[in-house]
Image 1 (spheres, rainbow, N blue to C red):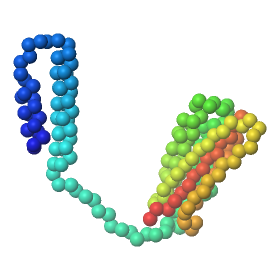
Image 2: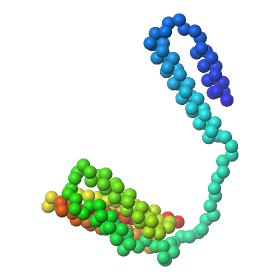
Image 3: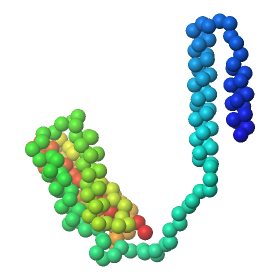
Image 4: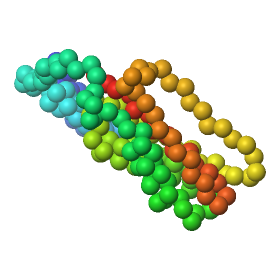
Length: 176
């Protein structure tokens, strides 16, 4: 409330009459008005955030430390999903260095969403797609992970186009 009183006091003091009506005075008035509006919006936001008691949701722990047998990450399913996405979006295309970086992000998100939709529960999914131009050079894509080898796994697929290759990888980490 103190900040609101200061705001009212400041706005009343600004109502004094000014003789000159030059452009610099108009700019000052406009800047003061903008400042007041920012203060009002921040005061309104603070009041809205602090009004009423907060309802916190508490979930009961399931004490589930390993996935069900029918809900485990299947590398075969993931490889099929990766290949179908890469084949559907990349077959018949030529390498384009301006469009493929955005396409990598889009394909990664699409693969991640399709793997999640395949029925995995309690898994964190990471999907990565790398697309490189093939100019008769060698390339190697590698990754290292620190995880529980009983429940966590990964799947990778290499797709070769006319003048590029793409490597799609999915990592599934069980989250208890």
